[in-house]
Length: 268
Image 1: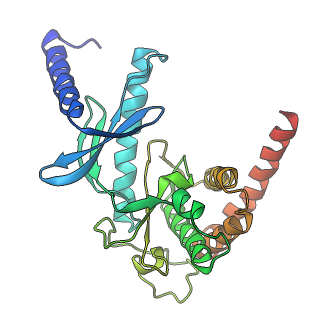
Image 2: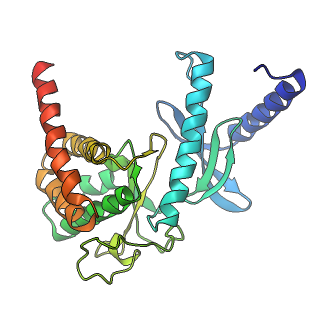
């Protein structure tokens, strides 16, 4: 349905205002589909994520994809926080320009950066791998599929954070003693908390296949950037299996996914 001229003017004015606002911010980095800026929102330091138009896509398709991914990112971040899984707080969403104002985690480093500067066999890194496995188990037990699990989409925050909700562990999960809280079991020995980010490709699914593919994406990303991290990933999987309500089914399915991946690699 076509917009009326008045509606078009309102949309255009809102988009132009947003672009003028973003023009005065500090550009942190630009990816394939989004730009990240640092600024303030109502007096609080904030990161602003803008999904910009992709000229190679049809304009209608591009608008739909950008809007869908913006909504999905916000929705999943809120679901994670309600489940006690650390994710950035969402301050404001502009669905006209596909811009998200969120919590600035300036004191955090990516898991990729941390692994690149730490011995992979160290006790702290092994403990951190267990935390990753436990966090992903809780994510999947909420039937949340991240869709782009990489070590760049996991942050380590070493200061007290407000992005942890009041979490609930799965009733049937096999945690170490059954009594640890959501905050305690997502921190390493140095007090760093794992925070998941970038949920633009996330979706909801209870299928073991989708959860296994999520883990397989992480495995490929981890081993491509850290070739010596195979044992580290196995540690993640062991904790995943112990922590998830459906860990056995997902890990069994992961073996099938791996076999399919190897066959594709051999065929080319």
